[in-house]
Image (tube, rainbow, N blue to C red; front, side, top):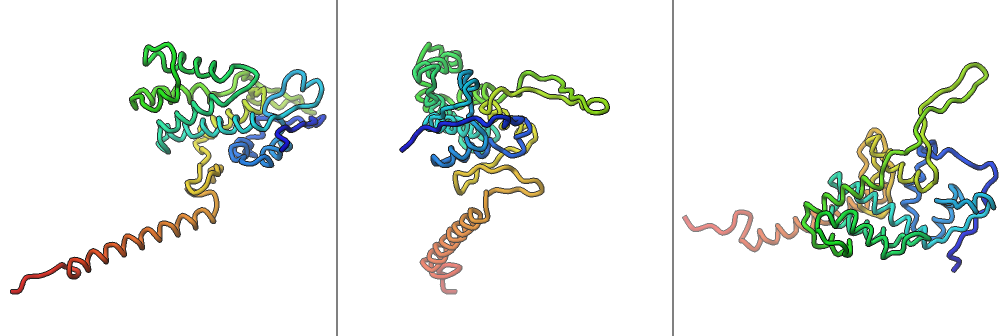
Length: 265
């Protein structure tokens, strides 16, 4: 199996990362599952990060195992955000995040270095221990401490962009002036889009019936990503209610009828 994608960058194919928000590339990336999904994403949106050498050569190399790690990391961030809003388990979301963070093996810090930095920066101030494993800590820590670290992790990863200012474009007559900011990579843009979802008070929704995440739709509260998932969940709930009703009827019959046995008058 070919686990590497070689990309030829499209000359003149640059796009505005901020304006791309409306096409929800962050949700598309969150929903990547198989190799073909990642290949389609890279073909449509380009690499998450580009080195100076890749910029100059016009050729980028994408390792699929690295992109799987990035996808898991972004999903873990999304799950932490949901847990902070009361959707999902706070402890489990933090464990998932620490695990995903450790798997972000890049040319930078090794897995052990990441664990050490995370523990020293976030957990040591609470435990006064200098080192340890973040996952092991999260599994047994008091929930009050878990909540503090959870909040810190979300704040650390999802921030508004830097490089803000005004963009001024000369027109035939006058200028077009608007507030603007800069995003320096597609990876930064995907994390910023999670921030912007919350800013707009329309966070993406994790379907409770399947792994898909979907954009919130205006006008209605949508719980499921598709009619198929909604139908499957409805049928399952109907079967559960029917089973509960059958159990109640059997219990009533076992008690001698609707009102139970009566004494003779």
